[in-house]
Length: 250
Image (cartoon, helix red, strand yellow):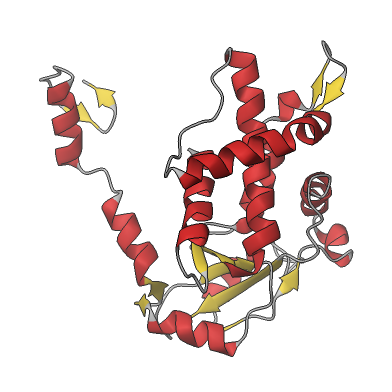
């Protein structure tokens, strides 16, 4: 699913004239996946190889296959091996897709998230930054913090570790983290970006937003909701006629 999502982003950049691509989530979370998604693949005892060795060996081959797929409007997985090989190549494909996106279009990808658990602005507080900012009245945005700065290490060592891990594959120089409220009574959102964003960007974002949130993301959330009617239809298709409760068959 993650690979298909990244392929969709890459396909859009190749085929559309895009100023900014609004990603539903945090760009930092994409970097985390390069480690947690395949932690057990970090080292292969049978071949005495680390995932970085596989990355260097298969980078060009997988990259070429990805672009060939996108040329034919396909988003399916590239490899079809046994279980262990499939997991390895899915992970390699994910890393290569992310590297290609950041290398060619990184300045145009903006992460927009309604939630955030990090605490970097108010390090003496036990509350996430977004909870504290939510109590501040008015619209506006915070000064961005660069997650790649050495100062972040003293506040959150996990961030430093995640970025160091990803830098083995691609040298991310900047990853900005900030908060935004577009309207006085709207919710707070977390913004992550490779480039620094200015007033022009936030003004443009406000123009395409509804109730303080980008309309296109709001519409996407509505379209992917699974309703009770959807559950009932799935139950009928599966031949289940008893009452159901969101995935629990009674």
